[in-house]
Image (cartoon, rainbow, N blue to C red):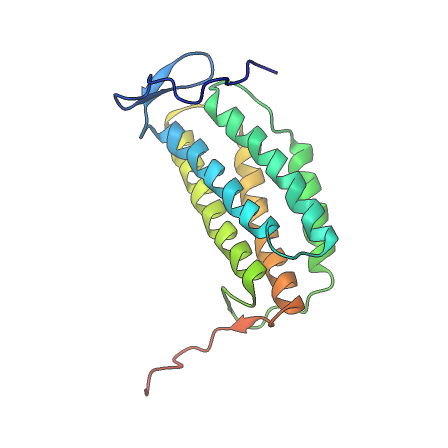
Length: 184
């Protein structure tokens, strides 16, 4: 493990740049910084889900995901570094299939809600999709490890399924009613 921060502020970013792994400096709004910054935001939103009452199985999965997301962010912050293996994606698929097996098939679109934990999980899903878009944008101009992109894609699916699981355990899923207020 690298060095630890003993002092939180360094003043090196006061003019709008930040350091990447390896010492390269880029603007704070660089597409790479947007990508790993959004992954960091996603990890914080997952922390909000973890702050809720959760079934042990969901808590264990999200704990693993938080560690994985630090790997994803670290990989994005260090150009040329590959930390995300295909096994991470395989693990998410197995977990996703396990949770999804007990859910009824979808017949309607689901609105975000169904209880606090489910709502936070939906928020995490949307931030995950944004992180995925940022990584796609980065991949257009710089080399990336495609496994990190696959991981984010599968994670958003898992977060959707977990939101369904959590909603069904709380207030129930909120189904979209097309045109509900059309005549109001």
